[in-house]
Image (spheres, rainbow, N blue to C red):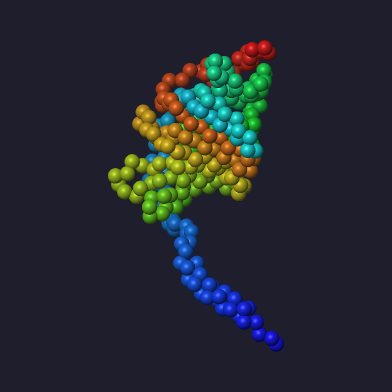
Length: 269
């Protein structure tokens, strides 16, 4: 067999290159998960229960962007009123103060008026599916708007997993329904209690939606996120809510939670 000096030199160079690169590649930092250990859930549950019950109402002005299948629609001025986890109203306004769209839950049914539609649709909780996707409970949506989670979930079987840096996950398991609350809970006696970072609703093993709470502020002694991002990846839905003016635990009136048909704009307006 005929020898090729050039080919042999190339093989030698390749071997030298591998000998140099292999140790470098083996030294590259690997992405590792921070180990978490199970901790007693009682103190965190007590602190979160106090937080849930310390919220009575919310009045706010917000900017809202809704993305469905990558197509965004933005509303610069949205009025939001939340009455505990019992009722809510979200209404988008145009530059002249005209009502563009609204969704209202009065504790019994959800009323919805979409942009460019004259009529009010009443389809009970399923009306929220047009905004958030299927299966979102309106009481749960109230909780998310306050940077929290449903009070009823506190009765579920609970597990608390924490890392040494204070990052924790509270798992509330009801069988087919599971909730994961990611929070920061400094393991020190002087901490100001757990701070909720995100809330994930899981049904039959699939995430129904994930809400992230960012840019925390304390208003009237209540920690409220000024930025809320809600994602339903299965339906390719993303809602971003940015509060600009917030009042906490103030009186709200019953007429805020009605959406009669006559509120809808008539043709030509």
